[in-house]
Each structure stands twice: as C-alpha cells, then as structure tokens.
Image (cartoon, rainbow, N blue to C red; front, side, top):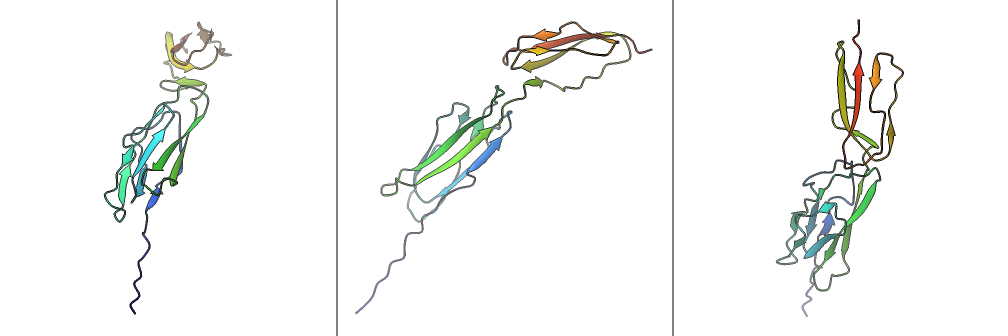
Length: 173
C-alpha cells in the first residue's frame, strides 16, 4: 500500500502592532502593517482615524501579502484622551472568525496650548506684547512683577478660538 500525507496549510495572519499611543498632535501615514495569506478588510468607527488601505484580496492562501494600513491620526483638539480600535476582519470563506484588533490611544491636548512657547522673553526696552494660545477652559492671568502689566487678565476659553494674553513691560534700567 502507499501512504500519502498532506501538510497543513500554513496561514499567515498578523499585524505589526496591537497597541499604539499618540500624543495630541496626531500622526500622518503611520506605519501599521498587516501580513496575511488570507483576504481581509480593515475598519475603524472613529472619525479621527483615516485608513488608506482598507482591504487585501489574497490570490492564493500560500502567498503572504504585506500591506501598510497607513492610518492618519488627526489632531486631538480636546483636553480629553480618546481611544478607538482598528478591526481587521478576515473575508476569506471558512476563516471569517479570524479578526485582528489594533487599539489606538491618543492623549488630549494640554489645557493651555501655546503656539510658540509658554516662556516669553522680552527686551530691556519698554513695549507692548501679545501671546497667542488656545484654552479649553476659562483662564485667568496674574503677575507679581512690578515691571509687567497684564491688560487682558481673563478669558472664557474655547479650544477652536485663539486667545490672546496682552501685556506691557517697563524698561529695565
């Protein structure tokens, strides 16, 4: 008699990272790779994440495809951290129970966001200055310096509307 043996199908099904964290600034075209010998579709319900490559169609189950999802994470305009999931679902008949999940976390922006810097240097001459920033909440400015006068001492805060801290300095003699 003759015995014939067939090897099992070696299925490739993995993602380069399963947990990813971003700061509030976001990231464009982040490298997130799916390696698979099966067809799949990637989805994300969060409107702050855009995927470039959302599907892969396998020509055969013996060749592995290596696809970059290239997600773009939009800037978080809120001070609240947020999270979402990218789900990669197998679309191959007989393998529909296979699913990969990538957890995405993004920090909220600081309550005060200065466009340039939170530290501001002025000359030794008298002058008027204005510093632009964003604030999620109401804010109050004060100083103990006798040579510095703040003309705008508070604001209501609106993350989409720039705020201005206006002040004047006396000469340093």
